[in-house]
Image 1 (cartoon, rainbow, N blue to C red):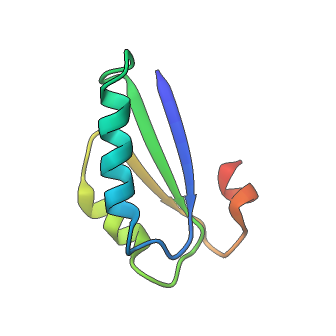
Image 2: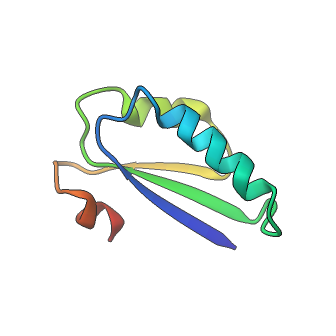
Length: 76
């Protein structure tokens, strides 16, 4: 299984397109359906977290940090 972790901060304008493109790219590899994408929202003040949740894909997970902590914390 392939796991991809993406830290995000105020990416509402492009997160959906990014995730759709990434999903298509992964699905064309031998990993096929055996993957997950985890978006860690670094307490954005736009709709980043909601945009990811609204996509409602089985391989896509969204986590939201309780406060702004930076990309390194998001990756951990």
